[in-house]
Length: 406
Figure: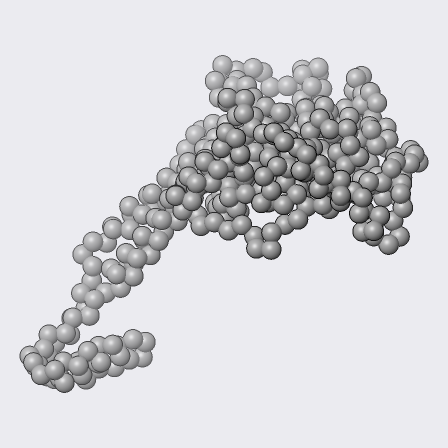
């Protein structure tokens, strides 16, 4: 893989940074603790987006092409796949499932503790900021989209991070650890394993599939379900247009073309507040469709697609749909809880082993401390006091959380 071209292009941009520097900026940035850090240009600021955004129709052939392009062995590109994801996430049911799962995780309380369990509210205050909640949301998105690369902005005057930008996923090549300065570039700028100033503001959320390759996100599995559901609704709309409204039938003995044309015009006028004049020997009938259950096949197919999406996102369907069994609903809630716990565990591990070291380099006082969900602390205390629920032999309750790769 030849890296000379992107390095030269990026070097030219670095040399032009002084000319492009915003008015009022300095060569150094304040970090936590009052220390100074060299202010270098961010990678996000060097990206050049296309004038027209990549667009793709939500169709099966387009999905197959996008998937093949993303999984290309020598030149993988995710621009088409990300454009498709943007289309399918307009589906209300899919978006609702994703949002519900994320909200359940993000609504959980958390704290900062040391090895003894002592809490540090003053340090926790550093993370009770909008950027941190948004950051956790982006981490959760990685499961859906497959990869996330975040470019922090420089700390504010107090030495704290306050915002970040998401590197467009369509311009990231996680398989090679590169970012395309332009979506049309053949080779990108490396961001992984490089000791450069621009990488000091980058943080990566990386996931792998069952084969150990870079994950392209579970939205790839949701895509055909959303597309099939759209096809179904289109077919249902066509059927409704053809057979949903009653058919007006006019029996007439007229044979002259002028008379027939007059009858056709009269029938066309039978809309809202319309009227028609017919001969006393003529008769108008309203013919209703004899097949009143024809739409059921479409609603069944649409529900089937929704069920597949629900199983993919939360592992069950009852929490988002009506269920006639309370016991069955409780089982589904426990299955969903396992999915939530798995994502909470992933966030906990990622924050402690990736975000924490990154922040410590920028002066955050996190030595010997770690992030922990308050729910887990409360459960541990309940076990110590004997207030924890007794273990059962219910396989749904005893199933361990899902295993994630990070």
